[in-house]
Amino acid sequence: MSKDQKQWVAGHVAALPKSGIRDFFELVAKLKGQDVISLGVGEPDFVTPWHIRESAIFALERGKTYYTSNLGLIELRRAINAYVEEHFNVSYRPDDQVLVTVGVSEALDLAFRAFCNPGDKVLYHQPCYVSYHPSIALVHAQGIAVPTYAKDNFALTAEALSAAWQPGAKILMLNLPCNPTGGTCSREQLEKIAAFCREKDLLVLSDEIYSELTFDGTHTSIASLPGMAERTIFLHGFSKAFAMTGWRIGYACGPASLIDAMMKVHQYSMMCASIIAQEAAIEALQRGWDNVLKMREQYHRRRDLIVRRFNEIGLTCHQPRGSFYAFPNITSSGLSEKEFSINLIDKEKVAVVPGTAFGANGAGHVRACFATAYDQLIEACDRIERFVHAKR
Amino acid sequence: MNPVLKLLIEGSNLTVGQMAEVAGMTESDVNQHLEQLKKEKIFLGWRPVLDLSREAAAAVAVRAVIEVKITPERGGGFNRLADRISRFDEVESCYLMSGAYDLLVFVKGPSLQRVAAFVSEKLSTVDGVISTSTHFMLRSYKEQGFLLNGGEVQNTRLNVAP
Ligand SMILES: Cc1ncc(COP(=O)(O)O)c(C=O)c1O
Picture 1 (spheres, each protein chain N blue to C red):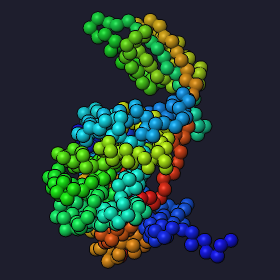
Picture 2 (spheres, each protein chain N blue to C red; picture 1 turned 90 degrees about the vertical axis):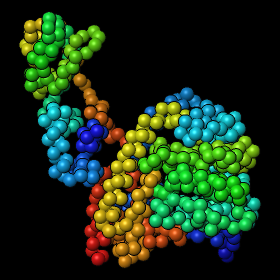
Picture 3 (cartoon, each protein chain N blue to C red; picture 1 turned 180 degrees about the horizontal axis):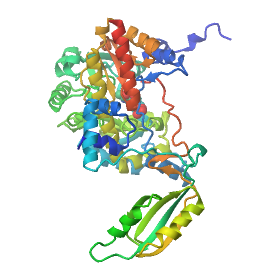
Picture 4 (cartoon, rainbow over the protein chains, first blue to last red; picture 1 turned 90 degrees about the horizontal axis):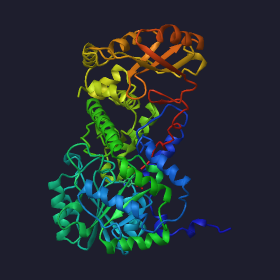
């Protein structure tokens, strides 16, 4: 046996930092069996609506067990186009502008691999989803974090973007509404960002996975703004709005030449998404909207509840306009975000995620997911209140 | 819509205190809404949903559904007879239906004999009842929205995830 097996690990993989989420996962896992309430999750508490599950069972009964086209089932791509047209006001040809992927996760990875040369610069707003920076590093590109601030409700501003921009920047990664902040941009803000992208000739990767879960105002996709569809890869999926995380299904839409480049990587690495998940996704798009609205209404009320409670407790919390995350400022407790999270799980058995797991700009905040039943949510708020008051 | 009524329609299983938190009002506000809804006879009352196949809950051993044909009356239609039938304690629910019969009556009783006796002695002898067709329930799979065979598996979400 080799003396040091680690020598075989690629340098850029060895250099990836350990995920802050993973650390916390292990900490909470130690408390198994105890009465833990977790606000540390990143997925709906709802199980996938039955009509969608039933359609997958039906697909299996009919013997749908084969590979599909690399791009995905044409019926699904047609349904995706119809859905995106209706809800996002932008249209894609099912034949060559839509690619079905194994979740938005795979679509993101494909995009970075297809569009980044080593050393290329990718702008992304931060705090952000944990995968962006490592995915950029894995293709030897360079990530440039653009800060977003609580005072702006964590919207990305064209000013911050312009200040962070560097010559040679090629891609802007957007996630609106944002995990972990719930921040989104108004149409006016988005128009300024779009103008900046056109001026600097940036390609935009727009991860809109939380878009249906927009509570205040309506969601605008940057792809729908004038002159943007030709420079935007629209990334979306089923995990959040349709409560389908475990199905692993998502999609990318964009100019045919760019989708073709992503498809090249996809055909050699993945071949296609699971046919069962694709069949379920067709059902979701065709008949799932009522359930999406029902779930959104629940999230909306839970958001109002948890944000109100955080502010009453003295943990200043902006109103997240979308997603199912609240991102309160915990500095009034006198603790750092890490100390706060560790002590909270220790003393009151409530799990939240320290804001710095989502990048340095998350300092002073924690992420609390409100995709949890009311009674649990209320109990969690009571425990956090007791915890904060005991600290004072 | 009245926020308390909305929570009731959703069938969310909340205490008054929890409803207050969710709707962002005080408990006495919630109680006031409930009183008002009662006054308007929209909210009729609370009832537990039980799995009656479990021994511990087996006080009502037998339930049946009865299709009833009745003669409508000049002036009142089906209402007077339907009301008269509904008033029996054995009757849990009573609906006017379109189609092959007029009333669908849900009854409960401690034994098959008692339910049968109710049908033959009380229900079918009411003036205006033309015929009855009784179906005894053998097993329940879903009660008022609750699945009886466990439904979903316990939540298996990861405790911490991206
Ligand atoms: C911003 C964001 N993008 C992508 C994903 C991954 O989505 P999928 O399940 O479609 O791979 C998540 C999941 O947490 C997310 O929060």
